[in-house]
Image (cartoon, rainbow, N blue to C red; front, side, top):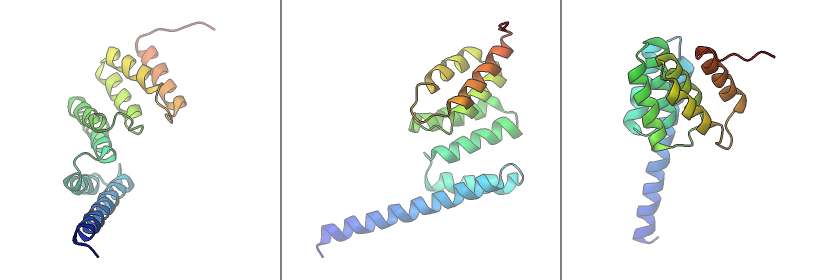
Length: 144
């Protein structure tokens, strides 16, 4: 086996091992949330130490800040960081939109909803529900 191909193989094995560790900790965090917050945060810390750009871990960290600690600014930062790494991270949008609505940042929520509805694979029903919640907050009712 040539020296270059052995190095390539070792790099592939290390990447695979790291991804398995990240996924293990992200899955543990998802399994523990929201019932065991200490274990959730510990697993998220491990996951983000292996891969600081993991969108699932960043999204769940944002959810912890928004849904449990009511620190919407910090939650918004985590969601934005996740989307800066992968704008197509579909799992982030419903929680990010909800956080924007809860913060009262209705214009940003409206723009994010509009963009999320264009993403292939997005759960449109979930985003439409967020749009209805936004319209309710804005008191824009329509008689049927």
